[in-house]
View 1: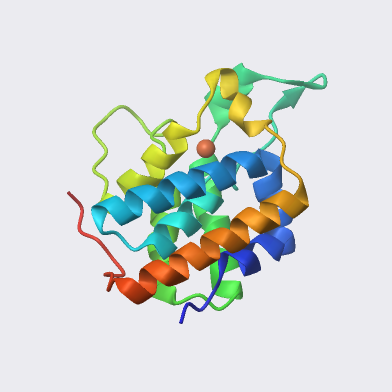
View 2: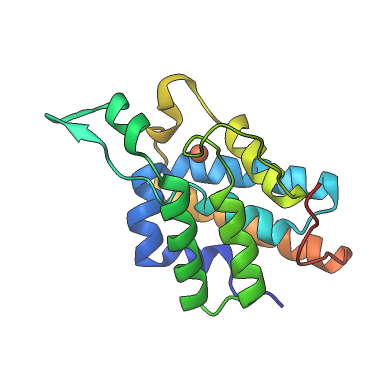
Length: 181
Ligand SMILES: [Fe+2]
């Protein structure tokens, strides 16, 4: 029914490199939050979970003299832009529906406003869910990026999410896109 499963996404070398760089444990926790929020709001959980899983894949490592430099990061970070592009490319490569790939890429792009000039950001329900799912798993000083999870545990959690999404899609008809609120 779905063109791309979470498991397929997880196994791809691009995910292995970039989702792991930003923190696999955080990506998985945010995905679980996104699933729950999507079910609550009647938003397609397949899109919400995929966007949450990939939301930080645009991170670059801002190291100076072997240490993370928060100032460098704050000044120069565009991880949401980079992540949106990477997520889109990866999804298309795996054969994702183009409309879905675009929705997911947009939710990744807008999951944070940290790179945007001051101003109001209007988010669709899907975009709100991904931003909130990210926040719910955040820890002080970016510690959520460094939490560890083993590959075998990650695989189990991802397979479980795939099942939860499949079940949700069987029992409910979801729109592919959602209006901006
Ligand atoms: Fe995040």
